[in-house]
Length: 281
Ligand SMILES: C[S@@+](CC[C@H](N)C(=O)[O-])C[C@H]1O[C@@H](n2cnc3c(N)ncnc32)[C@H](O)[C@@H]1O
Image (cartoon, rainbow, N blue to C red; front, side, top):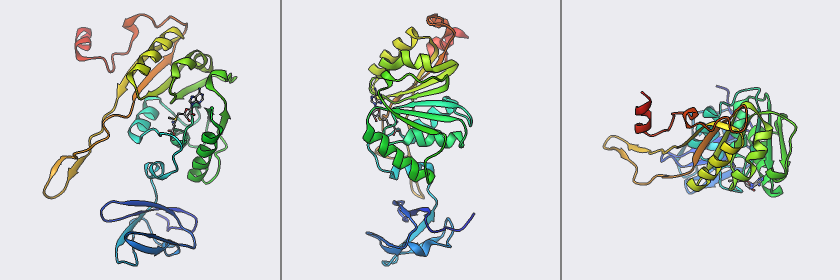
């Protein structure tokens, strides 16, 4: 792996796992563990240790996407990595696809989508608040070192937007997504996927009704719960605390005609309770 150069982002990690994201420049950086000269990192490699003025040893890494998202400036609540990864995988994002996203918030989902798209295809983000659009743009620019050419941000209310394109994928992180479903239906190609994140289950049910009424089928809903474990020489047990709930993920496909997916038998069996699945067998 190449050596660190001036201008790069570096993740400093203490022995206890505390992390700081810094840019290599001609300046000093200090924390409760002591100071370092950032310029000293130039020429070092990932996994190397740099000693602070107080004798602490900091490990040096290039930040992962997760490191960047947790350290970037937040203007809104962001989607957590466990949900981002599932949304991008189950939403089947691929290089070259056309994606619409709303709202952009702090840009966590936009950055994740753009990275999965590998500079190909097109991402259109629709956000109604200018200050969030600008903040997200700053975060995106910091991550990619400039604004990706395949990304456009439209500042507008999603309910007023009519984009003349047939997107392959639509990603939704809105407080009231059901109001925009008719519009999503017009902007998504047949067979295209809509992926929506909702913190409250009431939102999920309102969304379901609108999806059914606007030509969507194969609707699945799920929640992911991550429980971290504390493992060392003496212990192997779950941590006492966890992020118990973040949101519900809804995935739906655009189908041939509004109403065509109204037969319950057409629903995916994924995520259906065991009793129902057992009857299918
Ligand atoms: C929770 S934040 C999105 C966070 C984003 N997914 C991320 O990971 O950083 C929700 C965003 O939706 C925007 N929003 C709410 N209603 C909207 C609407 N009708 N049209 C467009 N954007 C809207 C809000 O301004 C806010 O920025």
